[in-house]
Image (tube, rainbow, N blue to C red; front, side, top):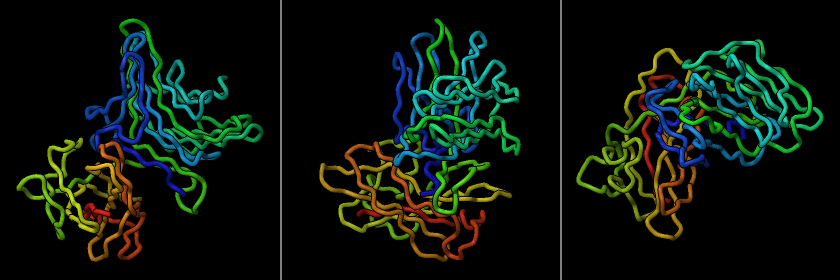
Length: 340
């Protein structure tokens, strides 16, 4: 493994995450507050006991990792409440009186960042976390600066990191505090690539905008196939394509990215799909670069509900020439689902 987790919430749903909160105040998707692309994820405090949290399961658990996240603080002016980003039940990052970064280890504030942050501004935070009861460490960068905001060494707990949790605590009666997160990335330390600081990164989505070939799946209505699979968020069983024979597939062209003067570090396909009966059923997502062969993301086992985030293969370079992706390459990619 190398890249463990990449997320920009561009599909505008919370599939793949465990969510909760008090008084049924749940995390939300925001299209008004975002750092890149079309959406971000928000956790909230709404009076008392209204609060929300979201966590990502890390499997296998990691004793060392690099995490990147963008955060936007929008606290109630009377409380200045800020979120906690947990690395286990007692160790987390939060924000102090002047929104400077605070590191809490085993329930104790151990280090405070030197930079004053401000509300209603996006900041990019990178964390290098080593879990150990004897030689643990935490390094934190802000907005890509080479100098560290936090540089802590000591007991960070013996148990590996099995989840990352974004949490807002309950507040006072009438309080409304919000925090938003975008452009998530997490690396482990293996594989020789994506094994260190994640660095700057922004995540966008390109949706189907035309049919290609083949078109072997059955449309839910008399329509161009791409028009039945381009809803964000998904419209469930309102429009769809389906197949009942193994190795049937559709392929679609994509809306141009609109990118200019950027480095493209990875592309992947993503979908929301399900099977229609409680029998064995799989799907694979296909990517095809211009002039190249189809690349399958591997078979994904389905449920009878749209509650699985189906991901295709991550491609770090253009498989046609093994060179870094260019905007022109990405704009010509075709994608589609294949029944398995």
